[in-house]
Amino acid sequence: MNRRRLLQGLSFSMLAAKLSGTSSLYGQAAEPQPQPARTFSPNDRIQVGFIGPGSRGQELIRQLLRTPGVEIAAQCDVYEPRFAEVNELVGKNVPAHKDYRELLDRKDLDVIYIATPPVFHASYSIAAMKGGRPVYCEKTIGFTPEDCTNVVEAARKTGQIFQVGHQMRYASWIVESVNRVRKGDIGEPTHVYGYWHRSDNWRREVPNPSLEHLMNWRLYRESSGGLLEELGSHHIDIANWVFGEQPQTLLGTSSIAVYHDGRTVGDNVQAVLGYSKGRRMFFSSLTDNGLMADQVWVYGTEGSLQITLADATFYKRTSKMITEASHSDVVQKGVETGASYNADSAMPYRGPGHRVNMKRDEDPTLTACKSFMECVRNKQQPFANVDVGFRSAIACSVGRQAMYEGREAKIPQLTA
Ligand SMILES: NC(=O)c1ccc[n+]([C@@H]2O[C@H](COP(=O)([O-])OP(=O)(O)OC[C@H]3O[C@@H](n4cnc5c(N)ncnc54)[C@H](O)[C@@H]3O)[C@@H](O)[C@H]2O)c1
Image (cartoon, rainbow, N blue to C red; front, top):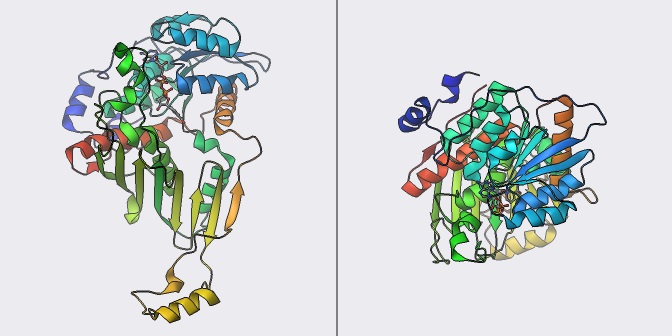
């Protein structure tokens, strides 16, 4: 790994903090010496240590319980009521720890899952990899730019298996659709538009005010990258996959339009990310109106692709798209005026299109967990590897800061 090139593009202050050995703002990673990963026989059960079994974590545990050859062997959470929730889900008493270092010190764990809030992802992942364990870590892989760099460095130095929770990379209908786009099915893809709109204030009820920041970590800048990071990172990852590279720039806006309730992250976000050759990704997230819901559009020179959580639909440019009805409508309106309006230049986006459906009973998170376990058994790097995690996380991390400061972000590039 060329350390100098990996750091390319980081600001001086970030670089200074990095070279002086300062770790994440949110805690010092434990520094055990790198340990070799375990080798498995086909009948060996993989013992999982789980850190942060909150809402996403319990969904991951549910999917792990459906993954053959896997045991939930230990859990760690700073919020004790989680332990009983996990025990009920797993159907037995799972040894519990309040400090992640105690969990990592156990000798009976083969892999580590991490689903804490993102500020802890980097230091916990690095400690786990240095301790000889493959890691499945929720997105985003790091909160600060240094975090993101440090996780890549640790993964490369230890050679450990690392998978990021971008489970859409394991959704069969998205895999098929993106592969077709990359082969030229809609011509040259030039734009990706991601919408993640909801009618949901994003606030959780807390049993007592002292738990506000622990439970509503998403609402505060010191613990959350807001909608860009929490939701946009998935769409940015799809754009990265479609374009085959990471973004170079991000220009964004964020404000509180509705929920003036003490939160410090925006309740709406819009961002434009720049890729090479003038290609663009646009991301919009609203929390007060769910119109458009969660969908990604890929626009190409010969057609478009709509991706939703259940299917994908291709709309192709046809040689003659004007129908009798639309033609007579245009003639009646008298606006057939070449460059200013030409019905034939509009790409179709309604009608049946060509649909790619999800498989029956498919769950991308289950597929992602199964695939991770296969990688662990076969000592292979996952499809959603650490580089994939870096490329979405760094855009969110550097981008959100620039967004708050009202300037365009230059995104540090990861090079081989
Ligand atoms: N891939 C996806 O589709 C997806 C979906 C939702 C959330 N997520 C990600 O999952 C992560 C968790 O989100 P969530 O909604 O489950 O949050 P959550 O608040 O419900 O759960 C986080 C858990 O971590 C615990 N925790 C906090 N600090 C800890 C620490 N220092 N050590 C151990 N445990 C600690 C909390 O008590 C809580 O139980 C986030 O990174 C989020 O972005 C991913």
